[in-house]
Length: 107
Image (tube, rainbow, N blue to C red; front, side, top):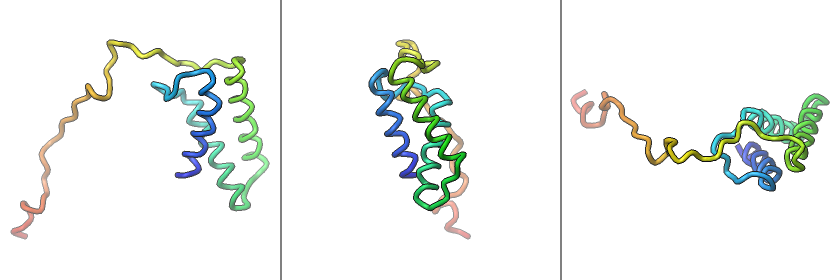
């Protein structure tokens, strides 16, 4: 978990120069890059770094540098829509609990 958090922090350091963070919706490519970076760091610490993991890590950093320098655009990055549903507007409903301490006392 820490490796994923560290990888996300690294990615934010590149994106923060061009985009307001946190992003409303992260493009799928950022998820893949986060995993590639975290896997490399984990395997490097445990002595299991392979050439493929190293290459994927280096490719991720190169891609992020391209974003930071403006050569690569993140898509889609939508500006927050005023009419969009926000987290505080979401209502969650569910069925009542089937099992509870009180309901199971007779067993």
